[in-house]
Amino acid sequence: GVEAIVESESLAVVGLVEVLEHLPRIYGEFRKLVRAMEERRPQLAILTDSPDFHFRVAAQAKKRGIPVAYLVAPQVWAWRKGRVKTMKKIIDELLCIFPFEPAFFHGRGMAQATYIGHPLAWMAGPSVTGEEFRRRHGLDAAKPLVTLLPGSRIGEVGRHMPALVDAVDLIRKEVDAEVIWAAPAGFMARVGDRYDRMFPGSNFRERISRSSIQIIEGETWDAIAHATLALAASGRSEEHTSELQSL
Image 1 (cartoon, rainbow, N blue to C red):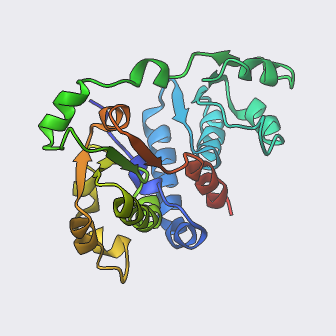
Image 2: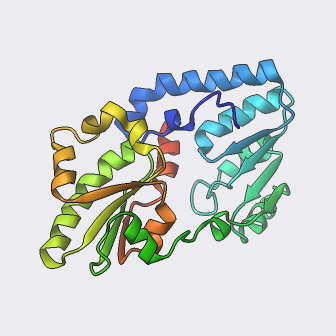
């Protein structure tokens, strides 16, 4: 039911070269949001993650008298603490997902920080039994199940999957296991004809097929819950991407 002015996928790039290559397009998306604010005059801007992009959006919103709520406090308690000074100027309400965060921000003069809980606390969990999940996807119940989670962005998947497939080949030398790639819903449709370009020079489509890795979209929680082993990419990629976008 959301009318997307800018698709978040268009901002999801990882790596210095890739970020620099896409900077003109990222700036164009930024200008789209600014124009939308000017034309529609929203009563509230709710900005989520991507701090080095959304801090700029927040500053533009404040200039136009639009209050800003920021969802998922940047991890300034871990690194780049100086950002708190900027946050106090451009954010009206900071929504924190860890219980210790409000005290951190309050202690630095940012009273507008509120703990709302972590969404994974009520989102995570399987929707079916392990037996049903394996039956649905034709997975042998007698074999260990390895779930690959290379990430949700095309760029990071391109970087992580070759290493994960190497790991699968090593595992299969020791154990006869079922292997699945847990992808976000609609991921392969978004990739489209870029599939082979994600893994240049590797003939990757053939390798995925040869390694008998089944792609399952939109069932990540079940794929994790029922796995014997899950090989997952770190969620830190997004923070580093945001940092690079500011260069």
